[in-house]
Image (cartoon, rainbow, N blue to C red; front, side):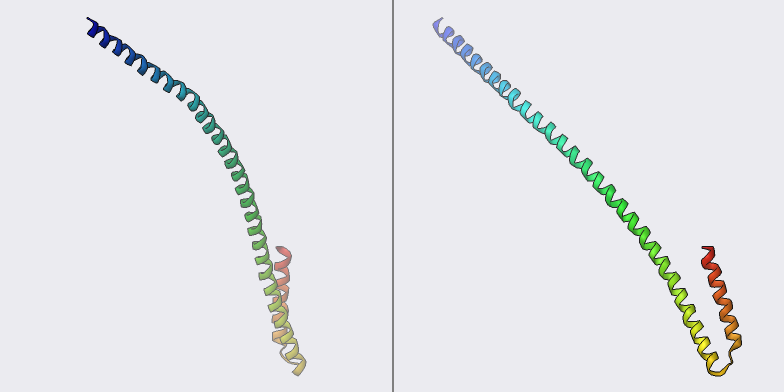
Length: 126
């Protein structure tokens, strides 16, 4: 009977040891698990702040790009208008010089004057 009691007492010691180890693991998990959970929550909040800041920066950059595109488009149209103006001025000067040389080319003068008038009307109606 002593042998059985020894075995039973050994089993009780082993079960107590295992229960103590499980309890120690659970306590350790509670302490470290809470720290890990808090750390994850803190990292999540930090990531959300960074994402919000990043989104705001992207919106600001997109607005600047749109503004610059509009300015470039306006400049492009202004250059086209200037190109037409310069072309007309050079054509007018050419016709005037030809007319001054031989008092001729009156048809070209009329045609050029008409073209200048049409150009000015187009510029006014824009």
